[in-house]
Length: 335
Image (cartoon, rainbow, N blue to C red; front, side, top):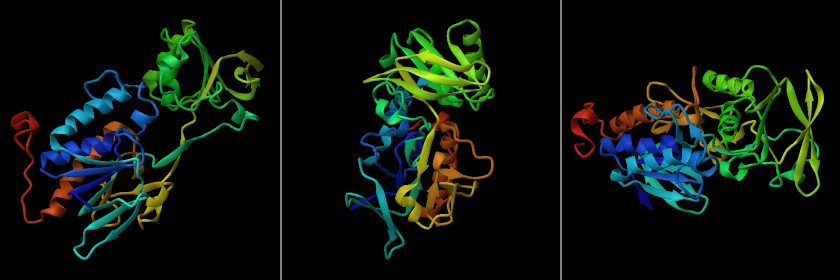
């Protein structure tokens, strides 16, 4: 059985940063993740996607962010159980949590921090006839390596940050042609990204179609074209090599939904004082939690992880006084 101070379920950016913050308080962490590598969605789904809202990094690739977080956590020697899903939780006679994975690995800790991102997920697929036939034959729901689209005609659908960011990235000398299609005129992404797309469209570096949506896919063994229904232009035929519908992910909590936690719309309710759940000793940080004013940003997950470990320390060592120290004064090795 694996013993640790804080058992973190989810090895994405928020979980990895929690290792660092816990290490500053001399708390040991072990992480469980169903994916075969640390990094969560940033490593598995879009390692080459640029991220723009990490402090001190005007732009950083998702995979590189994971590398930096792993480097930051390394001095505190975290343990990992990868490729296994946290299934069952129970308490032993000493009040510690026992978490067993789908492969039977048992973990024991006084504190659980659920940092599972969106939980288990699958992409939301548009209701277009014959779509499945072209999956991995020109239709992709995730961009892992942007160079895969080098010199190709690419159509992206969506109005969120992923659609905007990839349209900007691929139109900058990667793809031969980029078309961004959105069924509305207003976008859900960052205003700065929206403006960049508008500027690129004005310069002719990408084609922007709003009030439009793809209604038909064409081709034989591989995608060759799309039919788009536009309120302004009517039915429009587009020749393309790839179509990437980026409509987000459909999250599912999986077995965690049966852990007697308060759940609202596939997210775990928490107290913003310390991001604790209704079960004492279990916390939820990052995209998997919900509270009034919640923003699903990596930056917010870092903040939540910081407050969570402070509360966890007090639960583990109620007799000790916790005095906040600054890394600017003590460094990392001084803790």
